[in-house]
Image (cartoon, rainbow, N blue to C red):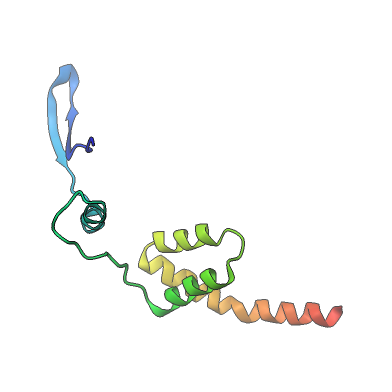
Length: 111
């Protein structure tokens, strides 16, 4: 299996290297877990877990239980954004819930 390089060089004119940039993996715990799981690593590695606040857990459980259209994409997007953005999104969503409930009630009264 080929691996990605851990550094690359930035070249100036005529092929001269101006400086090198090194970058570290941000997925080492995840890699270690899956390498162990698939037998590519002998030393056991714990399954990584993303720390989530209660509103995030509740939203993911809601999506899993009700499975609305595109629920997998919605869950992945929710997990992919920063903690700060996720908390703001869920807070804004909760603030708008009473408006949505009121619209549903009004709509039911009209039918």
